[in-house]
Image (tube, rainbow, N blue to C red):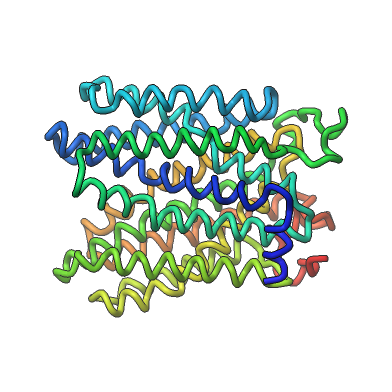
Length: 408
């Protein structure tokens, strides 16, 4: 826990993580808020609601690298102004938009979503030392898990007591308030030694977007795909057992164990490679399909939960190490896009596996997706000559365990 105290003692770190938690909780809840509005207020089908959410997700995936590139070139506050203003307009007008307009507006809102995840990761990289960074990214992953536990649940509870339009306004207000809070905080996007001309120069994309970065982005896509598939498999398993009302309990156990895993991993003195953590996550996910009721499913997801936050944190750490300072915004934007794409594809692919087999097939498909991404990431990292010879910290997240030096 000494490592976490050191990280939280960094000036500006505690408010940054607090604001990030608020915005991420709102962003994880925006899909649920739009779904409730389309289904309850517009009296349309869940398929229609899914199309709106898909448009929002597609916008987020496409906008991540573009906004990151703008941060690299124009600075943080310029980008926050360019994203907060459209969010105000979109969320204020959600209750009066016809469905067709809402579909297009959701894509635009996703394209200009406040880039809280990439901004937080860039700031963590700039504000911490190499020795502190793994613990800081573990805290960031824990905040992400808490946001997934809190955001959608709050929206569901509020929707039972007030109109879907008011709930949408609340989600939008939290996003806007968080974006404004980050703008006021104005955390650094580059470390002090990265602000000179040479360090801040933009290298060509082919110089940094090589096999090792592709490996990390592939694994980031894989872990997101696995996690979205696990959520669907949990619901399908409990629906078959007639216990779907217990899904919240199982997901809560998953989230709590993920938080615990992230805290334990961040306190360790020795890191683990991303491909190994993701491979283990995939392996322990597959046997969860043998659970057929909610108590055993709570037990079955503990292993996956314990490995989730550590895997997510190593992906963030690896991206921060591999990306030069001048393009770090674009790289973290690509990481966010990879995660968005993984979440978007995970549910339909796992859903097809469930339809042609059984709920257990959903866990198998999610676990195999993680294993395939881990193997692909490992093989891609082996293709790079630098991965085998470089002693730098940027190689540590991809190398086998026996080549990772203890953290200083």
